[in-house]
Length: 238
Ligand code: HEC
Ligand code: HEC
Ligand code: HEC
Ligand code: HEC
Ligand code: HEC
Image 1 (tube, rainbow, N blue to C red):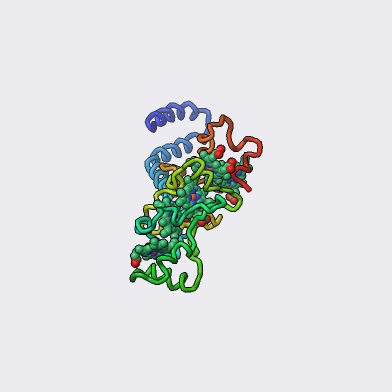
Image 2 (cartoon, rainbow, N blue to C red):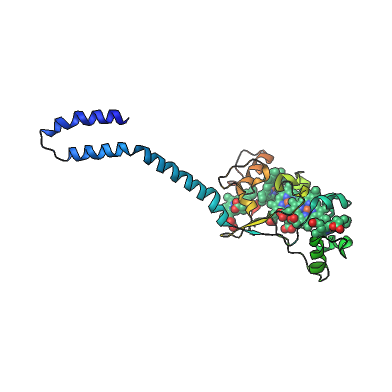
């Protein structure tokens, strides 16, 4: 490319030289300099691109989310083996159809009235919560904004959706994972998802409005969008 531009400039300069247009020759010099600098410019562009990707995809998400530890590190694997009714021993539907959500001390006290071993997490549970009759302030990974209405009964009983489809394999985890809170909105990172660029590999990677709406559209087989029907907003919003 630079060779052909150089040819052009050689052709042009004698033509205009006679007409006394002085500006042409400094311009040509400038162009030659620019052509010479093509390599470094591309390099600067690439460095700039990489730098902004690092800032946008790695540094920005780190700054945007604050990390919070659960008050107690909870092991799902040993408990699912120990209890009688699997997940439902702790996460069950009440008689009115509402979902119990994260368990209360009531579900722990039969086995943890006193510490059975020397596990420091169990000792924390007994000393700081059970002995003082204080509920454990668990952080809810999937917590939606207050304006959103969500019913487990409609999904788990009605539509027979697996817990993992929305929550991932939390039921098979040996440790509570870190809770990440968006510093701007105060919402949990599980709503936005881990991938700041918006890619989604699993159904549980993200639970934004569009993710709920997409499944509703597929599940109900309606031609129209759930979001443009009359009163459609009030399916999910209070
Ligand atoms: C002995 C009681 C117990 C049993 C049994 C149990 N869980 Fe849990 N579960 C908990 C506690 C306590 C928490 C809160 C701590 C945490 O998130 O790590 C929790 C949290 C969760 C959450 C996180 C919800 C959120 O958004 O924060 C999911 C999902 C979950 N459990 C699914 C399951 C599934 C699936 C099973 C069955 C395979 C199961 N649990 C069995 C006690 C239990
Ligand atoms: C059916 C009995 C049973 C129930 C109900 C139960 N646990 Fe446990 N829990 C155990 C056993 C057994 C162990 C493992 C033995 C040990 O650590 O001494 C254990 C261990 C633990 C530990 C230490 C290991 C770890 O890192 O998780 C914690 C913390 C704990 N349980 C919390 C809870 C909480 C919170 C609840 C109520 C939501 C609960 N447990 C309900 C039986 C139970
Ligand atoms: C269709 C998706 C979906 C399915 C299926 C689902 N959940 Fe949830 N779950 C959610 C959403 C969304 C929330 C947050 C609700 C809110 O903030 O009001 C939630 C909240 C929770 C919580 C925390 C509730 C609280 O505030 O204490 C627990 C625990 C939980 N789910 C466990 C389960 C278990 C166990 C199953 C399977 C029996 C299950 N979920 C199935 C989407 C789902
Ligand atoms: C995996 C698919 C799926 C996902 C994801 C999902 N839903 Fe649903 N939802 C359904 C199905 C299926 C029904 C039952 C539809 C029916 O009864 O017509 C339903 C029903 C509901 C209902 C009850 C409607 C009624 O008539 O009572 C509400 C509210 C709701 N969903 C909210 C949400 C919200 C909020 C989210 C996202 C946080 C969500 N759903 C994510 C499949 C899903
Ligand atoms: C299928 C369920 C569903 C439907 C239908 C739905 N929403 Fe939402 N909406 C959500 C969920 C879940 C969130 C929270 C997650 C997010 O921000 O994407 C949300 C968030 C929002 C927010 C941001 C609130 C906040 O505090 O951040 C607005 C505004 C909103 N919705 C407006 C609407 C309007 C207007 C409609 C009707 C055209 C509508 N929604 C229909 C599920 C739904």
